[in-house]
Image (tube, rainbow, N blue to C red; front, side, top):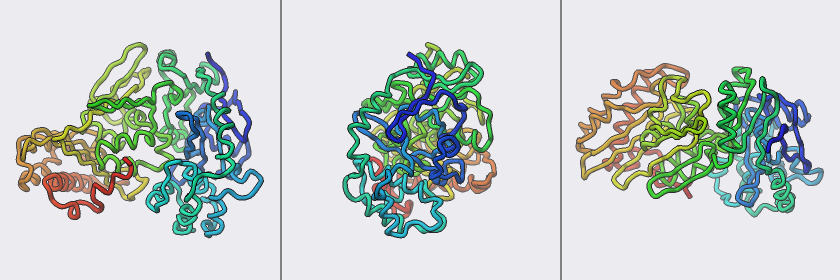
Length: 493
């Protein structure tokens, strides 16, 4: 079964698009085609949140509301969803509770950022598990930049409007909207365009494999949180786009006794609580992983497949000994994540091959895991240095060490010399900490860029080795942490 159009619900009706640019963004469609200009364009890279819209989807028999950066989302990606923008909330009647609270609390000055803030809070308003604490609201708004208002009145408005159960017209009309979304779920392969230029969204792995075999020059897109910037910043002329978000089962999760198996198309937001259960540090990493808009769209497979040396998942996966599963045609192969990265911009993946799953071993009782992200901002920032440490202890000695860094080389990689200095050594010996830390210079020759100089990165990585070893050895958390690890388990709850 196949169709040559993308379909979604907009304002209570089904929209079918049979002709659009494969690389066309959702924001451009809204502003230039539909002429809905309430959604703003500012950074065009998914950082400021002025373009935030909400996609309502049917999942596990209920409606979920997810904030998305329309500036880097492709219009073809919203197939099967309901698109909600700031124009829709009042529906010609009274203001939505979120809008009313922002107005009453003086949560807007120039107003340019306000539509995006409203939509982020609207999505939060409809979360059944939402909490009313300031820390959660701060996380919700981490992807929305406001330069002039100040966040206190905005947070106050969020706490006021999101305190009770959702009671707006969207909640009241949920059964009908669920039924309408179910009708759109036809399981068809989608392809809009011709052989020279198309947007395709296969519905099965077999269809995806066949399409890539026929068009190995196509660009694979999962969440578009990276590819979207190729379009808006590099002006990349992408003619063929294959979206993997509709592939049945590619977002599946298998929770084994010894491992987590994560489908490549699993969004980071849905992976976060699963990974957080492995260790509080991973939970904190996932909380700081971009913004809620980014985590909603970005995927675990995409973060590995793009091969970025500063992708935050890769060092964790390497330290845990994870493997990546790839498919090409009917052939499936598996290799360690650390072997997937060959050189800067080069991965062990054929043009017509796609990442299928990640197999993530669960830490053993004797393993001590630590994950540390160093960035200029605490929230929504790219790592300057990212370190992941997995030490397996035998009494007071280190039996095995797996240490990986991001931001220190052209690829995320293990610190082999540091590991060699630790295996067999006594954990509680400070001389061991210093000796191992000094070997960072043997493992890495970092570059200087806008996030940090080579000297800075080397010093930070050296310090992290000492910090982590000291903490595992028992140095109190108030010495090694701004906030104790046990307070970081909120993501896992």
